[in-house]
Length: 201
Picture (spheres, rainbow, N blue to C red):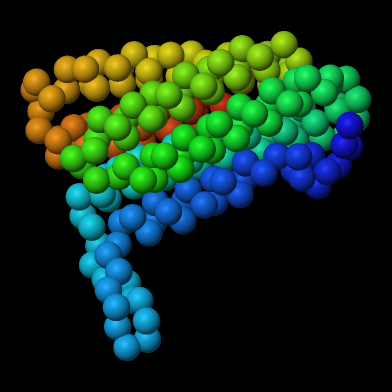
């Protein structure tokens, strides 16, 4: 079992997939036109900006949370008490979550809001499932934080489900995009508020 941060991170290529997802999300928000120097950046696609804000507000705490969890769980001597099975589960879960971020990056337009937020819902469910596995072997601070993440995921998932199922009956897609962005920003604010010591210890 790896003892250093470098050795740990080489087992988890999720950061590469997250970087690709981030690049794709940014690319989806601008048009490309062919110019004298090849392809050039064109206009901003304003109908995708709110979804991009939502995407960014989620990818930041997820990426930081994955990294902090790895440091707490597999950094230094802590790795001596972890089985290979848990390491594999963590790797699969983080890769699955990263893949869902990439799916989100391809569904930023307002007319695809339902697919976008269904993917967000799937992300939260996968993360909660991983959380129940992780509490079996995380240290005390990690267990406390993971339970907070699960609770936050459950509350957010319920609200998302209601929005996905009934939102179209009361709001147009632009107002749904505004509501979703505000909701995910609020989720991130709450996440950092309740987990500040874990993120920045």
